[in-house]
Length: 119
Image 1 (cartoon, rainbow, N blue to C red):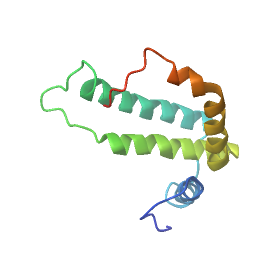
Image 2: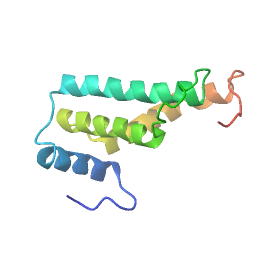
Image 3: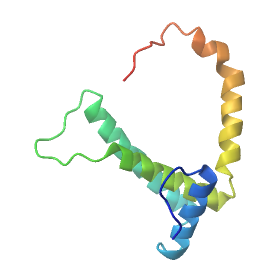
């Protein structure tokens, strides 16, 4: 396996995920299976967020999952889906930021509902 310490680009991440899936994982799941796995991982993040930042509470003695690890699971499955569909995430993220910048420059600046509250 390739070195994973230090900063990593999206392109590197896609390559590392592909390498891991091809060797350790012994191949990709079907894209629809990966979509279901992505939904499961997002649910795990939602559960943490509801309990840490929302009104729900953890059951006494329940283990506290690591939010960073769960977010990384989401990124992993997104990279796998990108690999399976031939999507270059670096290019896609660049286009997406440009789209949002053009579309939303005034929208968010002038939004009276938006607060400066930092969580």
